[in-house]
Image (cartoon, rainbow, N blue to C red; front, side, top):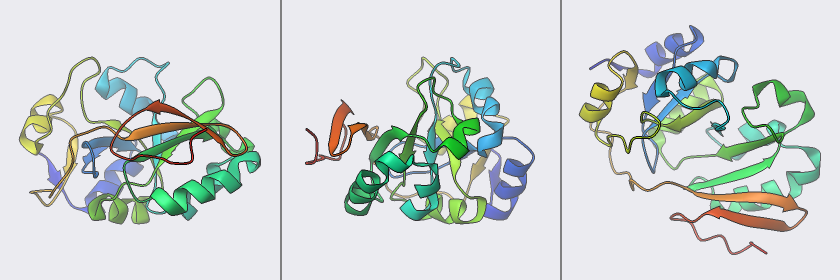
Length: 193
């Protein structure tokens, strides 16, 4: 098992490789945005499946949000983050190079995990996915994840602490004041229309 601290994780990420870290839901595999190909390769994930951009706080992600959606983004982010909610929202024109979707949207999330937030305060936002091989349920324990991804470093120390083991709720921004539920998860969003 390749356990690393935040300092080593930062060096690994800067070299273009992903790392695995805990969130409040499922363990994540993440990379710096410019190295998104690494997640697709390690997970054996289809390129048409987008990744989620996670940050340490909602202000860290606001520059990635298109101007038309910023007001709604701020309202939802301030009420439900940190937590198990992913917002799919139009991306800012200046950040289209990191997009992994074909519709110019970006999934954004702030996990309610001290370890994850501490890591991303140092690294900046990370493109992420659940830490499993695509098409398989995947392990939720550090030991199981290490078997699935033997060459990927894992953020320590362990044990990681409590996680729900459920995927996040996903909402999609349609237009000003209008959100659509994509996947029901732990968080109940009252602002859906």
